[in-house]
Image 1 (cartoon, rainbow, N blue to C red):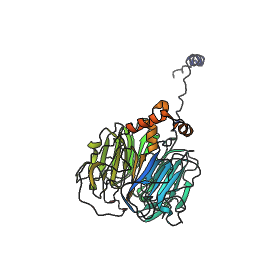
Image 2 (cartoon, rainbow, N blue to C red; image 1 turned 120 degrees about the horizontal axis):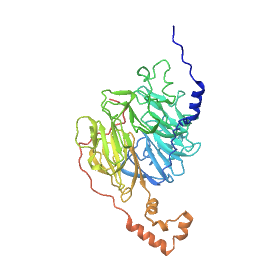
Image 3 (cartoon, rainbow, N blue to C red; image 1 turned 45 degrees about the vertical axis):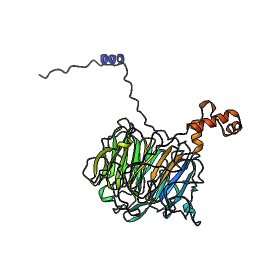
Image 4 (cartoon, one colour; image 1 turned 135 degrees about the vertical axis):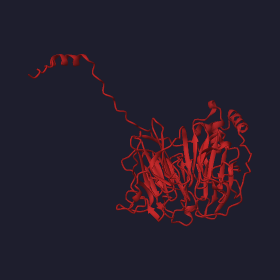
Length: 483
């Protein structure tokens, strides 16, 4: 005889449920990044190098400067960026000035007038910009409302790709309609965009894997969909990764940092280990996890990468030719991060050209090293520098350097302006709040005492120069070779 099924006392069960506290639903955390603030320290724009396409911004008759030279007629510059053969300058008011080669629209403005490429001029934008970036033949900016505008063109091994599937864009266009973005980074021919929700979008050339979202069969744009997937910004997705909080781009690489975990992922060209990963592959198409930690900034050129950590230490990895790593006379590829001893514990900013590097220290001094044949180093000769050397000129002496960026044959710097230096040295109780107040007090005895105090507080930049050099290299044009 089968056993009788025991009946459940549903009433008791209901009573037990009512006596237990209700479990609170776990609130879903919404990830959000704020828009960056525009840089506010006003400086002066300096350039050096070779400028046969107007990228020095000094007029069509000036094609070379061996030391940093002043670029005039740009009001209150606060940010600078060097493209392959052009420059962008962001002002305190949020305007952007450009100069240099405009063959593919990288200047974002009309240059039909004779000589207008070689002098700074304003780009017409639908608003004010917060930050800028530039590649070989394209430019981009982040607007105050979170929109990203770009202009110019991307290139691949076959030549001009266009900025979108419709071709080059000679004036700024909105790349991600409906998205609110908070950061941009340009490689030589790709653009990385970070949204306020922690998503990353990439667009441009994918031949070195730098987009991080294109399959092997489609990186050259020769598949069934052509270049449509390359020239339409699309999301780079890493499974089980946290939302991203920071992005960096070198010529042919992309770096992403997760929020919470602070894990840094890398993708792109790795033929000289410039992805800071031991993976034996010339290019990496899917992002790989690196061991990088406590990173403040990543910069890189064609075949090398610099890493600046939160302890103000600067590290280098990659190809060692021409001294671009700054670690002395090294012949072999450097496959692991090596500290640059001269800059240890005092570096606040790093920048790169294709085969040269820059660093700014906490005392405001600018150091450069690497290939010197185009005078990009700004030290007055055409020799390569195997280790960091200080850059000294009449336009940098006794002033703090703020930014440094290298292009194909030229470099652009931002140096503290005289007015900004005076503001910093004024006692807090006597700093004028407005220009009108400052003018009203200019003739008073108190103001004269302040001026005397300013004169005595001006700092002197160190004048020690490292003399490690190699044989002079012949000037060479910017190449697009990736090997």
